[in-house]
Amino acid sequence: MRDRPWRRSGAARYALGRARNAVRPPVHVVEAPRDLRKLRDVEVRMRDGVILRVNVYLPPGEGPFPVLMSAHPYGKDNVPRRTRRGWRFGAQTRITNQSLPYTISSETGWEAPDPVTWTRAGYAVVNADLRGAGTSDGVGTLLDDAEARDVYDLVEWAGAQPWSTGAVGMLGVSYLALSQYKVAGLQPPSLKAICPWEGFTDAYRDFMRQGGLEEDGFATVWTTMTKRGARLSVDIGRERHRHPLRDAWWEAMTPDLGAITVPMLVCGSFSDGELHSTGSFRAFERVSSEHRHLYTHRAPKWWAFYSDAAIAAQRAFFDRHLKGADARPLPPVRLEVRERGDRVAEVRAEHEWPLARTQWRPLHLGPGGTLVEGRPARGTGSASITARGAGLAFDLPLADDLELTGPMSAQLWVSVEGAPHAAPETAADAAADAAVFVTVEKRTGGRWVPFEGSYGYGRDRVALGMQRVAARELDAAASQPGRPVHTFARLQPIAPGEIVPVDVALTASSTLFRRGDVLRLIVTAREPYPRNPFSGHLPAHHASPRRGRVRVHWSAEHPSHLLVPVVPRLPA
Image (cartoon, rainbow, N blue to C red; front, side):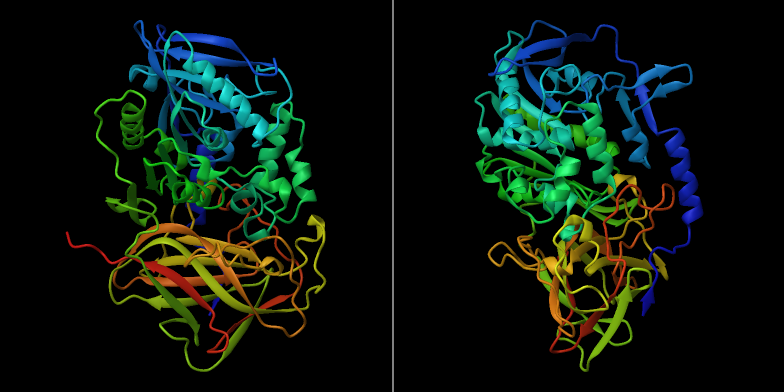
């Protein structure tokens, strides 16, 4: 069955909503109270003598107070600005279009905790400009050990202030989450807890080269903005092109998660699969913390971060580990199961991730565009796809309710026709060889069901994965059911006529299918979503081949299949 996932009904209505939110972002700003105590541009001397500057917000009273800190290169003073026409926001707010309204105070920095909320809860709040950013001195580097040492010094400074109890926690989204991992691994004495609320943990695998394919959309936007907004000694945007494989340069940016022992509450959203989701789940699984908690959702990123439910979980976590209060303990996993983007089926507590009772079930590609449970279908079949043509669709009608919770993977047996067979050696040639994109879709009543996706994209599917065929080599020791891990250490070109297995890691989800729904697997040779600012998935984009055909094969000898995480529903 042929499928054109980038041609969908309902695009016009969706585009109008996107345009409206881009002009008037759905952000409600409340003026911070005049009596909010703020210490602006407080100087903090690093171990090498360079001065970094922070803003400090203090609760009423004498103190001392536990401290919540954020550190980032975006400018601590990048807060909403009041104009004659209302509040003015940074470009990031418009680029990452949000579908649901959220409320912040006028002192809330980009992706940072709201100082008004947290000072009212009895916490001092520190928002820090990293080296070379905002009002801080020096020239900085991003995501490396030197940055971690600076954050270490900031944490210890905050722990030693007269207004501080000596207990410091870290909280924030995206880069404000990334900056927590390496410093937590250094174990500064004053750091008592961290809450990385959505943050990747492997820049290569999670963000800039998912599946070995160059991300040339948001990665370009982000590296350009950080270069313009901070003084940096390394141009990541330029340097990443020199490292198409995962070498020591990428490894140096990767935190040692096993070195983290402080309590951690990490947000693993199902709605940011093209940036932070995979790394957040990896953090939960790999840290050595005795007290670690995972908070999942599939809602718009900042609506979720500033929601009452999230703040309640964050407060319970920090009250327990920074204040020593007898706050309610959080469950190991807060699991949110969705039926569709705007409908939550259930929120429940779980003990681990992935769930121990998961039943890994293979769904094999079969004749007539079907998915076959159990063994491969009899006979043989194949079909070709190109980067400019339609994809392939395979359907499984469901006779009963089905919950899929966890990561998924696909193994496709493919051959390549009409594309260069020499392994490309540079990033400029990265789009020359073959790639496959795999999408899992839920269909109800003959219509596809939309979900929240990365960068505010509201027409996402259940799960998405992609893989460069030449970068298919697996790390057998690290791979697990539903989670193939590729080495990305070398390229393996396909010879003419050769058929090889390609394992594709898909994003995690927690999705409830109802009886009568259809689970659809879609295979394309290009990114399955359109690239435009309104109905498409801008700014996300991954380079894909422009020439040649990928032929997908299925038979007993070539058992192409989707591996899904079926979770038995517990009795009420």
